Length: 326
Ligand code: F6P
Image 1 (cartoon, rainbow, N blue to C red):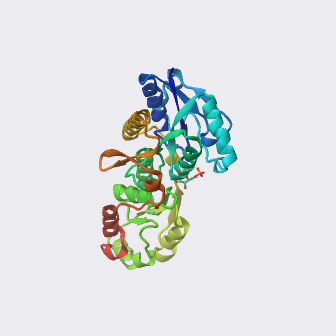
Image 2: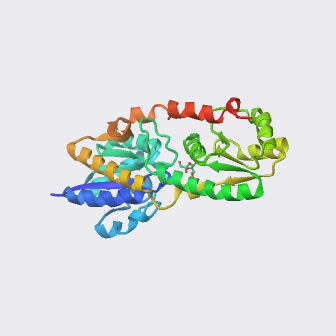
Image 3: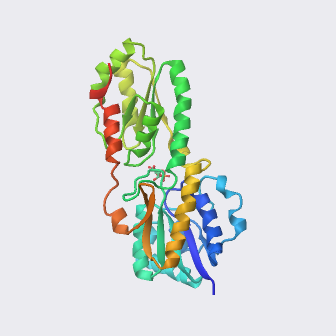
């Protein structure tokens, strides 16, 4: 009899989920399994939105952001009674293996579910924030960085023509990864992230001197954990520079998945299915120093994510006011 395996997306969607779904269906079939989709994350597990998936379901989706099967943040799944309903639903379809695209919160829920139900799972780190401990890369971050790069490049066109300071706010929740990589790769003058506390008043003398020497616009990248309006007001009051705030918002979550995210989706899913077939039963597949490895939930969820120390050192050299070139 065919083995059944299901996939679901939980938490914030990312570009890369659709390529992952396509690979999931095709590789499950290649391995002689019947693939299933669970719609709308853990909500769909609870409400039995579980259906067999076919090639038709994934045809043409590789170019699309978001996720064809929907995602959700489920409060109900935190309650044992709903988890038990979810387990019954999966078992009624003969499914005992699950691939979960999501973040560490989703994996923690899944770990509890595994211990209660025995349903095996593999978590694939998926979040544009790239803030899951234990993996250098989370699915979707590359596309998000590409979207941010495009936006900053376009804002630079108007900033340079109109001699303004632009404060551009990126997503990332409490993690400065998106802001920092974007600031470095877009040539921004300022980058404010929670990991590197900076008193912007310390920039005043340096920026005044730069303005005297001809600098006539600024790009400041600010992580959403900090206050971009305050930064904008500082440019106006302290430097007399007309300023605008652009909150990039949810455009960062969409867009045609990048080549890298497509490739990583393909590899993540392949290794996940292989490991589930081999009998691994509750693990997260991570990517470190160009290698895939399997980690326990404790390894990824017990400690908060920390930005890479080398990156932080570069960022300090580039963005600390004490390094500002007059
Ligand atoms: O975790 C992904 C993320 O896009 C964060 O960067 C952001 O803080 C949050 O989700 C936004 O959540 P929502 O889509 O619920 O507004």
